[in-house]
Amino acid sequence: MAKKKLRRSKKEKIISGVLGGVAEYLDADPTIVRIVWLVALAFTGFIPGIALYTIATIVVPQARGE
Image (tube, rainbow, N blue to C red):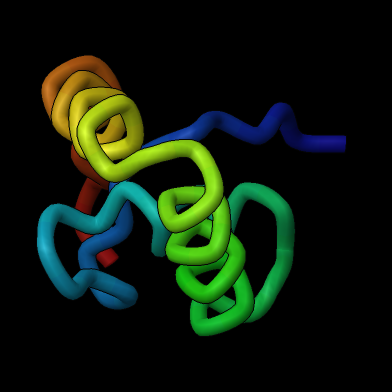
């Protein structure tokens, strides 16, 4: 079995591809992942969520050619 790696998606990209990459990693629908992220943002406050997304954009590498 091939080892999965979390990478920012190139094809499921709206802002930087972080949530699309999470969806690909989890084999889930990107729309569902984005909705769950927005609900989590609403309940926890927008500043921490935006900070985590920004950090993930910097830390998680871009996917290679697709």
